[in-house]
Image 1 (cartoon, rainbow, N blue to C red):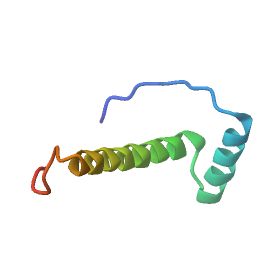
Image 2 (cartoon, one colour; image 1 turned 90 degrees about the vertical axis):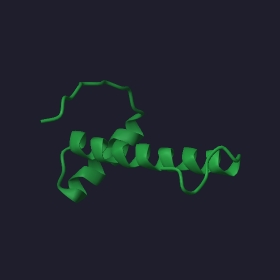
Image 3 (cartoon, rainbow, N blue to C red; image 1 turned 180 degrees about the vertical axis):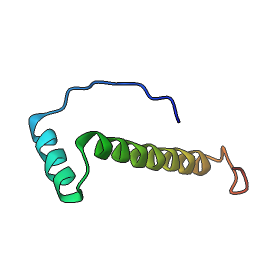
Length: 64
């Protein structure tokens, strides 16, 4: 089982409301939904960073 760490953050009330609505629609608890969204966001950010590095000539398409 992966090691986990608790992290707290402050979110605007409107964001919490949207998270709760989405978690209800998807039948997930808020924590599970936030973990899923963070995982997706991290993957997208890594792709953006890799593309930017490629655009600047810092990487080639063959580098993993």
